[in-house]
Figure (tube, rainbow, N blue to C red):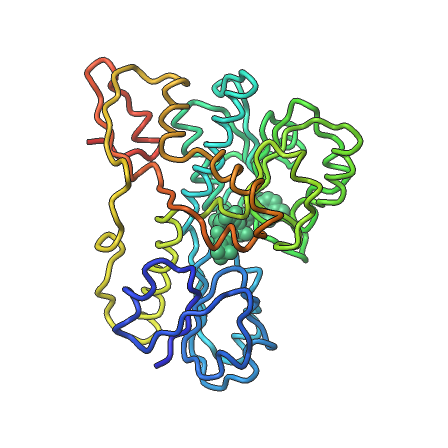
Length: 373
Ligand SMILES: NC(=O)C1=CN([C@@H]2O[C@H](COP(=O)(O)OP(=O)(O)OC[C@H]3O[C@@H](n4cnc5c(N)ncnc54)[C@H](O)[C@@H]3O)[C@@H](O)[C@H]2O)C=CC1
Ligand SMILES: O=C(O)C(=O)[C@H](O)COP(=O)(O)O
């Protein structure tokens, strides 16, 4: 069995080597010719999986994407061909939530803001929106959720707000899929009209898909002097992004919000499990047996919880300014894909084991995702 997999998929060789012959590939340039003999195709978001890519292959049985988003996959075509499909829902949701939290900590420091006095509007209350709301709960930060699709389901008991209510919050964080059709299509959800209603004090974070914000309209508003604060991890038309937006960003990164080692590796593990199920074999491998120890994996806290400590601890595990710096330095010389492909190691809060002295005891760290010892 020939297993073709994106080279940017940690531990893929460990997971799949006993199942078939392995063929790593570069995701952006994969051709129909190259995968003619593939039985299994494992991709990331930069590979468009559609009729054009698959038409020379008559033996493909399974396609997997080690991502949450599925807008790069023509699922109807796979179904029509009887090709099994699996994505990796939730794999990097914690990573995205920690990217947002790191951004908030940095902006709070930069503008002397008190996080616990702010309200965060979360658009899209699925896996990433929910992981973010759990961390905000842990910190006692108020938030509103907008998700009309979940709001329509009586099984979801959370309180939902309208998009207008959420767009009036101090911070707006977008966590929706890219969808082009339907009542709640997200393409240019934040169009010129909605963007122009933002006040100069608001913070807008996009770590879902670039196309959810009309980037040209955003640039026009910024050029006209609007000062709302921008955090952009995702951009329209990646990798050919609107570079003029970068100087207007507080934090700008190359679609890496979900790039913690754990987040990427969970995607690989989820595809391993899905492929085992399709092949009717018992999965024997687990990520916890491969995941390496973090560079710094333990510390002791001596003070009760406060926002200065939060700032220190979050930045110790993940300081998003590192990625912002790399982006600004390399985007013109090396390009968007190079930055993503050479992403330096990053761990989730859970890789840090913390102990607390008696006076520092607090549940907050545990609820934020740190590992209590
Ligand atoms: N920057 C990055 O590295 C990453 C980006 N993503 C992107 O984030 C998106 C969201 O991820 P998850 O939360 O894990 O997906 P999910 O599928 O668990 O949740 C998405 C939620 O958005 C809701 N939604 C859909 N249309 C909406 C609308 N018009 N208004 C409000 N809510 C709407 C859905 O009902 C669903 O609950 C993914 O589809 C992906 O495109 C995901 C992971 C990493
Ligand atoms: O999971 C998703 O959806 C994402 O956006 C991924 O973080 C994208 O990573 P790549 O698949 O483009 O490496």
